[in-house]
Image (cartoon, rainbow, N blue to C red; front, side, top):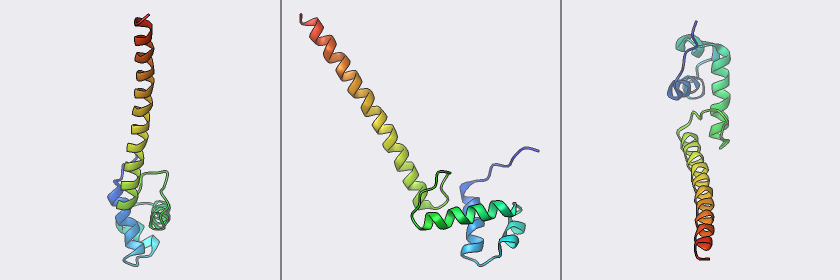
Length: 100
């Protein structure tokens, strides 16, 4: 049986059933038709995110999702910057050799 791909919103809703609405872990798992261990993992991750800890997995809270997106953009910009530096150095060397 193929593994279900669950959206971030779905996982957040599952965690909020327990954290916000007071469901028991087992009841939330039954209502949302997911495994108990999955609910427990999402709750743990969601609580950590609420404390400001950015997860290595896809974030559940909107704030942490935004942080992950910004970190990804920073990484891409740094990579682009390195490429531009290398290109500039290459063309500067080419211009110096052309002037001789």
